[in-house]
Image (cartoon, rainbow, N blue to C red):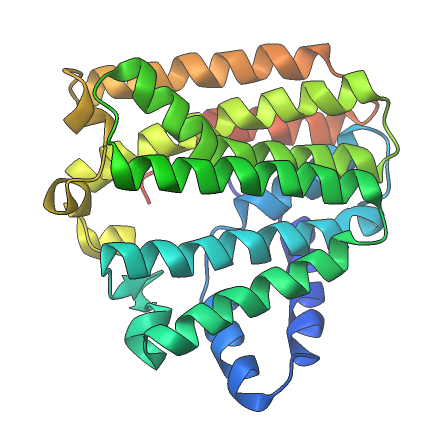
Amino acid sequence: MEHPESRRALVEERLERVLDRVEPTELAEEVRHVALSGGKRVRPTVTVLSCEAAGGDPEDAVDFAVGVELVHDASLVVDDIIDRSDTRRGSPSAWAEFGYSPAIVASDGLIGEAFELFSPDPRAMEAVADAMVELGEGEATELVASPANREEYMELARRKTGALFRAAAELGAIAADADPATVEAFGEYAEKVGVAFQIRDDVLDATADADDLGKPTGQDAEMGRPSIVQVTDLDAEQADALAREESEGALAALDRAETSDPTATEYLRDLAAFVVTREH
């Protein structure tokens, strides 16, 4: 699936404007390096599409979409420091480019800009705060006790990846002023998409070419990071089948949501299929 380009363009334009206001110059350079170095923009696309699918105007969701991307970028900065990964999206990671201390400051700056975008709506603040708690718990759990089986791996994937995907979709539904049951259905859809995305990411790390992927491969095994193919006895093909199960669960959740825009809803359905077949 190609990302709906009009939504992505909307996000990119707003992202540029948000980063233009960052001060001082040193911080602005660091956050721009992180946030504008590429990336698939899957999470903000989910936010905008969820808003549209729930009957809202994409313009109403774009600030939340940019905020989600900034939170995601901030988490990647920290991930790269923990993993000592010197490449991200085909460019030097933040710590490799600027050093550890500036990279941490850049991560903080990205979080601050994000929460300014969420602050007008208490529901948005709650959705993102919940996701960040989950993300932090997942990171902490991974550092002290790697999962030892499929169940523990799935819980870690839900926290580290699924939770922010959930927030992305919930934010879109909130921007559309959807009812709580619809917000929850969109959230469940996206959480399962996120888990499927993470499983596929693990498979790609184990099987893809680094140049195609835009970042080093074999990192999971080298770092002892809990990859689905390391933690369980599943091979790559079986792991992909598990990702497809999550994708199917995502579609079932989406079917329960109150949607009024068939085009945007179909894009979300396409995304659930795309994350389990992507090659980078």
